[in-house]
Amino acid sequence: MLNRRNFLNRGAQTLPILGVGMAGGLALSGCAGVSLEGYKSEKPVFSLREYFNGPIRAWGIFTDRSGQVQKRFTVEMNCSWSGEQGTLDESFFYSDGTRQRRIWHLLDQGQGRFEGRADDVVGVALGESSGNAFRWTYTMALKVGEQVWRVEFDDWMFLMDGQVLLNKSAMSKWGFHLGDVTLSFTRPTPLA
Image (cartoon, rainbow, N blue to C red; front, side, top):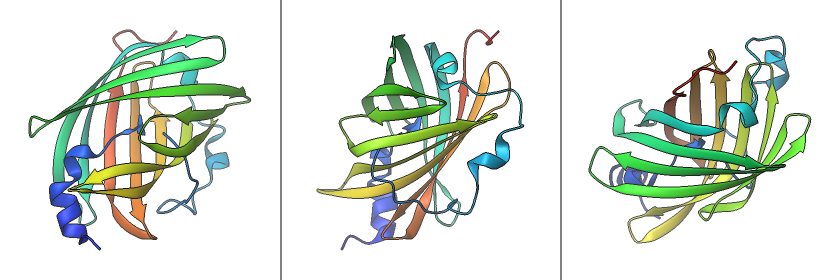
């Protein structure tokens, strides 16, 4: 087994966000005791389709389980919808000079529920909104050195206002907390 310190030091450049951290096998960790229902009266109400539509920028960090920042990154996104199908095209720029691209394919299932797929996601991401909050749970195949690890994400988003969305993802493997991805998204124009 690759030691976690090596994972955090060598593999962090491959760590994604999302969703804007978002995908598949529903092993929940970290925030498993937090209820999405508890946010239903919070404002402004978050609509994934409205917020992730058009160009978006994000700034993020990956922190290891001790809280130390291991990577900084920015994300440029182009988001669009056709009927119930959404596409989030993400370009990541990491502080060490590496780059990454991920394209999410989303399906609006109605009543604030979504499915998401991407090439490095294992299975299907499931997401649901309530009030100003949105939660994704998924498993991502991350390259760590020469190996590929399946890492579970518990991904929470909170709409702050018409432009700013905050995102925090807890990452775990075999029930062990590996670290967190924290992001701040911004839209060039506020939502109505």
